[in-house]
Amino acid sequence: MLKLKYSTYKLEVGTDEAGRGCLAGPVVAAAVILPDNFEHALLNDSKQLTEKQREKLRPFIEEKALAYAVAYIHEKKIDEINILQASILAMHKAIAKLKIKPEFIIVDGNKFKTYKKIPHQTIVKGDAKFKSIAAASVLAKTYRDDYMQKIAKEFPNYYWHKNKGYPTKQHRDGIREFGITKYHRKTFRLLPTQLEFDFKT
Image 1 (cartoon, rainbow, N blue to C red):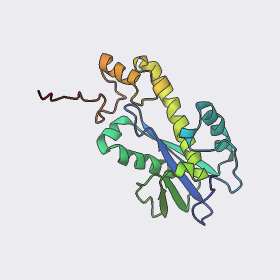
Image 2: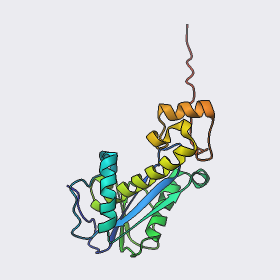
Image 3: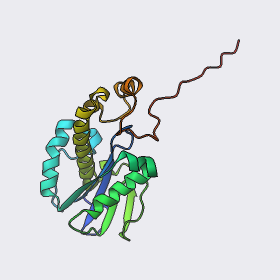
Image 4: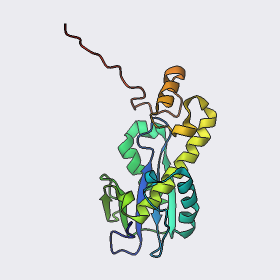
């Protein structure tokens, strides 16, 4: 059962990101402040939901939330500052875009940097524990999926419409055959290194 709040503050925002483990495309974060009466039977960590369930939840979250925002950090910046810093920056940017200033921030995971002196709490597996983080995970995932569907048309050889930039066999086969694109994260290990076996006789 997901809880509504971690703190006693009225305006508590949940934030989460999607796309950290991808080889291509942006990392996308969302921030969501929910009303006290927010309820939806489907709401859960976005990884536990089907694509159809996430698509069904997104307009409901956007309609009922007191405030929500989504932010993108693209591959060049990810390569420049690393994926952890890019994820935190994306969350900061999403919080900055909210039309209501939050009084407390709850963050999925165990890493965050203080944002504008607003108190915060990191929560491991927070997207499976708190409604606002779960809602943020749904928005981050659906917005990122939409973006990957769009750029998949530009570079169809990598099957991003299916794998969304994650390191699947199809995606890596595309890299082997066609090389990399402007959307690939150059600092990531895009292909696994060959294992060398030292056979002793």
